[in-house]
Amino acid sequence: MYSVIIAGGGPVGLFLAGELALQKISVLVLERDPPAVKGGQKTSMKDGPLGRRGLFKPAIEAFYRRGILSEILFPTSSSGKERANYIEKGAGFTFGGHFAGFPVNANQVDFSVFPHHRAGPSFMPGVTTLGRMEAVLAARAEALGVTILRGKTVCEVSCEEDRVRVYTHDQDKGKEAYTASYLVGCDGGRSTVRKACGFDFQGTPGEITGYAGICEVNDPTGAMKEGFMRTEKGMYIFNKGQGMLHLVDFEPFNRTANTVITLAHFESVLHRVVGTKTLTLKSLHQATSFTDRAMQATQYRRGNVFLAGDSAHIHSPLGAQGLTLGIADAINLGWKLARAVTSPSTTDSLLDTYHAERAPEAAAVLEWTRAQVVTLRSDPYSRAVGRLIQDLISTDQGATYFLSRMWGINQRYDLGHGNADSLVGQSAPDVILKSGGRLGDVLCTGESVVVADTAVEIPGIKCYQADIHGMMLVRPDGIVAYAGGDLDTLRSLLIL
Ligand SMILES: Cc1cc2nc3c(=O)[nH]c(=O)nc-3n(C[C@H](O)[C@H](O)[C@H](O)COP(=O)(O)OP(=O)(O)OC[C@H]3O[C@@H](n4cnc5c(N)ncnc54)[C@H](O)[C@@H]3O)c2cc1C
Image (tube, rainbow, N blue to C red; front, top):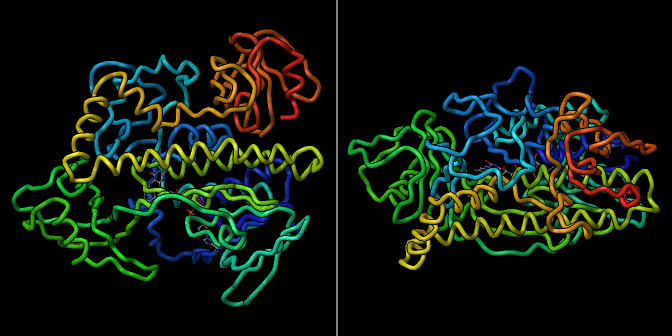
């Protein structure tokens, strides 16, 4: 019997497993995919360009605060540029992200509007691949004592009052059962846990079909340009050097799990999206498709069962935010669930804060992706909205607004206390400590800490001094639970 079973060993499940194990909780991860064959060829899409993923502040900070950021991120971008610790407002162009194909210039952003977002290792977004991230997270989880069983497809769940029984199907061993006090479904967008446990999943149907492919395009008339291009019929993103092509098409593609995307199909979509038949595809090495279905579980918790990552929310990759959302779910849930295991009588309401804090973040991302689809439609009304947005993005204030939402700088939880001006509910600024190092370094143990402008001593909690105003109580996930000068109030919140 384990304390927690996690269904799904993708990035979110593996990171959550490590978070729980950091708090000395026994964890079993059940992953559907079989283990990689030793010495076998690396053919997984997760390791190539199709597995590339951009990460933003909430995920970057989560990995940084656990000391694994440098292992996860590529040190340079695909153009060979080193990841910076800061970006100055000024002349020039630095790609900060895009909204429906309109690029945002990070050099226009006024970062002084977010004084808590400080220069340092966690300031800028970064890039990795799913393969690299999963390898680092699996190694971390196993080093902390997590059991990961691969080739185990979760197929049924039965919930009893104080335990959850999880049934798996294994190709060789058939049906098996595992028991734990808690179950977390991290089994992706088609989550079996979500369906088996009766979670309500609501949202909007898909309107676009997106494609990502590794291909060689023959373009005799020079019809295509590199980078982000909005067209009459959708959008494409072309990186000729990597042979990477993304297409956004408004025609439906009825695909099942076994449907192969053929070269002929990809080429016909290319013709439609770019608007010319002069293009031909010389080859198509790998391809995948996605839709913009935007759905979210109406509750992330049902009794002793939780959802995190894509099992709790799905949306199109426009804006590249799904993984960041999932990693932020995991760091939020990990320490709360660990408290529930170690001190069950006090923590039921704490567990409910997981949904209360995380669901609004996902809802905002779902809206963000829907808004992009509207401006990509080809009708004159939508195009007019698109032009308006382009005008706004090109202003300094507009760039600041768009980028703060994309990078997750504006994330703030309503903790039910703390005034609007304070840091409460926000990610703690990565301050430099008087004892040396930064706040991010000392959060790697997964404990709450106090940072104060003068020396303070509070039994059972590590206190650090830094050049700040008053005191900050920082939760294990790096969120500020208290900011101010009243030690009694701070002490009263220590249960957090
Ligand atoms: C083309 C594309 C580009 C993207 N780009 C970005 C980006 O740049 N940035 C970003 O933040 N996000 C991006 N995303 C989204 C991101 O990839 C997902 O949000 C993220 O992978 C979700 O992680 P997860 O662990 O929740 O789910 P998954 O990655 O889907 O992992 C789920 C795991 O559960 C396993 N599983 C499934 N069913 C079962 C079962 N019944 N039993 C046991 N195991 C099971 C699966 O094998 C898998 O290992 C992109 C998505 C797409 C499609």
